[in-house]
Amino acid sequence: MNHSLLSASGNTHAKIAGLAVAVSLVFMAVVSASGTPSDTSARTHGPIVKATTTTTIAGSSHSAVR
Image 1 (cartoon, rainbow, N blue to C red):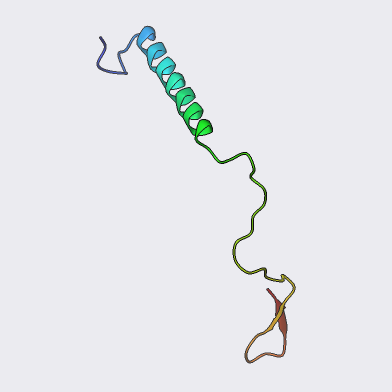
Image 2 (cartoon, one colour):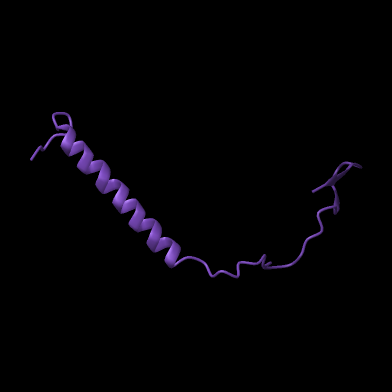
């Protein structure tokens, strides 16, 4: 067993890469199985704000759209 990645053989590197791929696949399977429900329609929370409301800046006669 190699204890240093600097002096590790190619077999050890392949084992590490294979383990990383396997763990990432298991993680993706668990996340997708416990993910959001399939009816992910656009839901709004809070008040609806009109985007073209003009605001007058104090001390100025200019209006800014925010």
